[in-house]
Image (cartoon, rainbow, N blue to C red):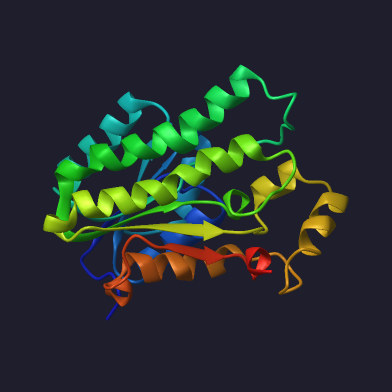
Length: 244
């Protein structure tokens, strides 16, 4: 018996890395999972990798029309949902003094605005007693030079989780934040050269980058009844980086 038997889950940005690993695990634990991605080719490949009990919906989490199409698909195919992992996000380094309006608008548009409307537009379909969690970043807990826009766009989620759980308490919908640290993903390979990766690894007490499956198991905890008494919390999974 799986921990998510009979559940319906939505994972935005589910075509790569941590979210893709989570989608695979959720399906293995009995859920039907809807994943989103901006590129159809990547979405098709992710659906192929997951293999069963998965629906791919092409779209951008920052585009409200795309979010409407996502939830229209969920409603048509399953009628309701139990778990939402708002994982779509991104960022790029920009030190203070060099930040552009376009960078601010892009990353706050996706990480903050996109996350808010991903959650809000899901509510009419949500079953009482469900679980919502958002992907944060330990950049919002540290002081990593050059990452203030990204850190700020992620920091809002901790405040939202606390407010939203209070607004949703009558429906017993839990709201939490899953905050990973440095994780070895394809996106990281795009952003960081070898020197930068070694510098980041030097900050991690565990001595290595995290793996996507290590974040996926934490996501399963928040999605399942294992975390039934966890509400409004930030679960930091970063090898101890922000603990010291």
